[in-house]
Length: 216
Image (tube, rainbow, N blue to C red):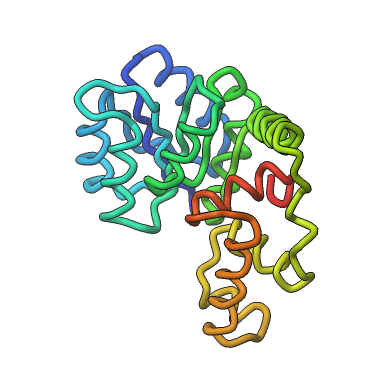
């Protein structure tokens, strides 16, 4: 059995120890290293080649979001799971734009950590369930305040299929292959989806899908 190699990056020794103990309960997980700050995390990831990096958002010398951006730029395959106390959309958008695939709230890490690692190791996104609730509540409030209808119903069946695949981290080429379409057709659908939903980036597509429970 191939083990999932994990690097833990957090500036609190007690948090790193707790995460390590929790992860090492599972036979298919291997903690290959611990970093106490962002620059160390980047250096160690280059040396140890982990599949997953569990990254604290607030660290000295280089914060988790900047460290994530540099890691993903060097190795797009790496799965970064951000560990944070904040569930607001600003942080979520910034971490997704940096290339993180998971976002875990510290107060639910003991429940969600194992599943987060397994899901992100498969190349899929993972968010603490509480985040989806917060996003949905904010979204419904915005709709009420502006007197708007939910634009999801404007999408065609095909566009809804494509939205889910894109939110799951698939590229245009992969979506084209799954649905037996040309890449150009997928790109056209993607443009229409973003226009209809008023979305402007891949990060916003993912957040929208989490909010709507299209992905978990």
